[in-house]
Amino acid sequence: MIYARKYGRSPYTVAAVHGGPGAPGSLAPVARELSRYCGVIEHLESARTVDGQVRELLDVLREHGQPPVTLIGHSWGAWLIFIFAARYPQTARKLILVGSGPFEERYAAGIMDTRLARLSEEEKQQARALIASLQSPGATNRTTLFSLYGALMSKADAFDPLPGDRDDIVEFQENVYQEVWLEAMRLRQTRGLMALAKDIRCPVVAIHGDYDPHPAEGVKEPLGRALKDFRFVLLEKCGHEPWKERAAAARFYEILREELK
Image (cartoon, rainbow, N blue to C red; front, top):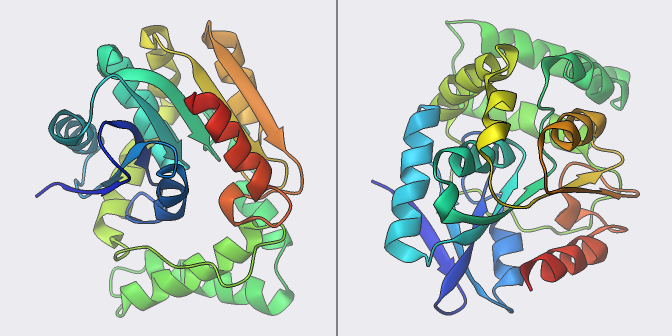
């Protein structure tokens, strides 16, 4: 079954695509805010392959949207809408990549080191223990382990998060994460991800926090070379999720509103 939530009124001309993979609902705050200005579809991925998630998104847009639409993708979702737009260029009016992972493997090597360096010694030990447990085939309570690990990574990813942020994740899907992310990493490692750039026909905007452990250069440099219509915006005092950042949230939404005009 394909899941989607709709915000605002028809026509639905914007689609919000979450990260993870396997974190459906994490982009709900952005969808809610933008629904003040336009109809927004929040796609909740469930397929366990990259191709499956692309097909899900196509079906959701055909059923609920009014293509071509503006696609907003966060983290893994930024890659997903990039892949989608390369395959179905007639369906994408604009891509907005938020906190995207690097598009070339050489930029990815230091991400975990950056995250761990931001944690206390106790938290580092906990993170390493959780990684070891999750890599063990016999690990039990994996959902709890993933939740603990995700909380540590979220802390490392944020610069100055706003208090009381609502948790909209429906349920973290570990199997989706494991299978889709492994396939996505292979796509980047084999340069298949960047090879899709030649098929992108719409404008692409990347919004990135200067504190995001995913290096901004890994998005700005490859896409700047490969795309004809590309703009990069770096937000100051901002981590991986701009809408949660005290110093950057207002500017983030201002940029989105400008891009949706």
